[in-house]
Image (cartoon, rainbow, N blue to C red; front, top):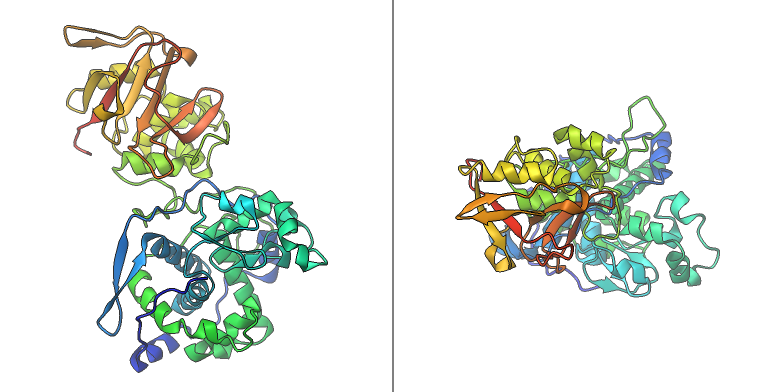
Length: 460
């Protein structure tokens, strides 16, 4: 793997500060609780795409110089830090996680050319080919890094590891999830510290490479390749730790229970490049990013909603949640949920494209309505598109058609061009929950033209 460019320096004062950061060995879960997590089949949420490489962010380091890390690297660092915070591991634990990912993958979620499904993952950020190693920490399915129920026992002949991985597609999906990788790493980290009585070693950062080596089991027995990343990791921690929020785990465990919830909580939806906030996928006053965060990255998931959309639907559009049995496989329900959840327009009709068209037309102080729409060049990101059979424009007076149910009407949110080629977020009655797709303005069902509603109100 290409190593992360290092222009970092580690001063004695920084070393002393870090020594004081981990004064006690406080772990999040008991062995039984971790076992409950480890055996939860549903532990991954593939609903959120990885950050696009939207630019570089300068990080000021202790020497007074700056280093540039990509948006992907920053987002991945925030995931690692967020999981460390959730596990009560503090800056020391987060530093160990960052050191490991820097050495293993340059802080990029790498696929593997020998495992084709990993190359298709929405999280994939480049690829390598070292055994069946995957992701930020180069974890191996054949070595037991995924949930046993997804992969079963490790193969007796590890030479066949690529073949083994390719026979377990759900394990590949799981291990490509960066938050899963971080949580799995930190649980093994905690187990190693307890098993080898390494608590004392945590008080001195010069020992971190040795601890990581025990976890990772690389061919370098001294762990020097990990230790060499200490200065880089400290400066990333100094830059990103305060702004990184704890990440809600995919299972909810109490201090007294050793059983896990089967709820697949969305815990990655906040980890796009532009939103290091809450874990719901909702971004205040941002129609486009909220729509993206609640949607699948493609239309291959049918009417199964992302966990983040299901949660937002239930909280912000309970009428739509009830009418679709929680699936959200209705176009009007999806648009309304985005408008409610983002806080842009809590009064937007909860469903029905006719009612929604009438609403935007009758609120000219909130929406600028354009009709007909024949090209995406007429649109701005965040525009709501609505079509109803029979819509007319007579002397500038737009009257929506009255056929709004099923094939009679449709609505979606225009996002603007995305890196994966999609430009809209939509759902479809009975067949498709919130997903990204490509705008079709030439309606194949003969309903005429779409109108576009651009929000211009006080929350814009």
